[in-house]
Length: 311
Image 1 (spheres, one colour):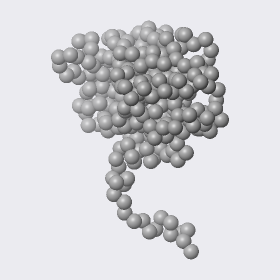
Image 2: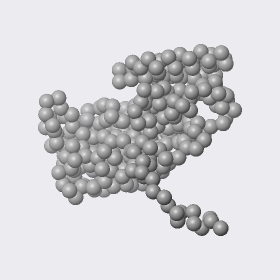
Image 3: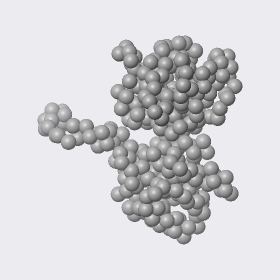
Image 4: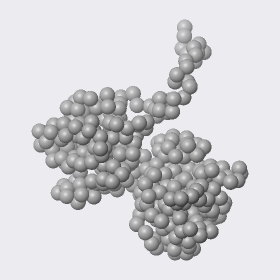
């Protein structure tokens, strides 16, 4: 990997993240690298300025924060194919990030990157757009919205809890009408976020599939389903008298949905590329540690697992 033009985004309002970003910038500049640095947060989006002001292609995006900071980076830089090195600085679970311990010797990290001693994990993303009328209308009336975790369609109100009625089609066929708090369409990456909280399935992060999970449905028959990644999920809000239905991307408001409009969600044309520095990286180990599964805390002796190897 060349390190000629690098983005460094640090978690807004976090001094540890900012100081580490400044140290990384000084080290990279000594290596002849041009660095674009700024905060990333709910009210700070540095990426449009980064991408517009870059005179040459960006080689790497270094993201210092938690999963939310990494998600924001993925939505912004993945269309340009920029790899992301996300480090857990001030985050919580850290599903998408390298540990700070791995990133402690930053000068060694630059050497590894330049010498291509790392792995890249590619993860599918979602894209969504709004359309007017029936499925024969294929001209979107909104921007294209991207998400790494999930697209969520649900109502929002400042003064009361609202119930939504949503009709869902898959590839043009009506599947169900849902009454409840909304619908989540997620990637395998997002299956361990909002989806799992709504009792959806955990899907291996390297797969390409869509998971559709109802949020607190009023019918016990409404269940999560997993469908092929090439499918198109179309969702119409029905009986939305308060004009409150919204589309959310990775927990961030994308746009309002008006009656008569539908949301089409499908696999995005771009992939998020995350750099892996850990030599013993395991998705299942991440699940055990981050979700605190009992098997990772209470260990019983298994004398049969390696019995065939004994002599």
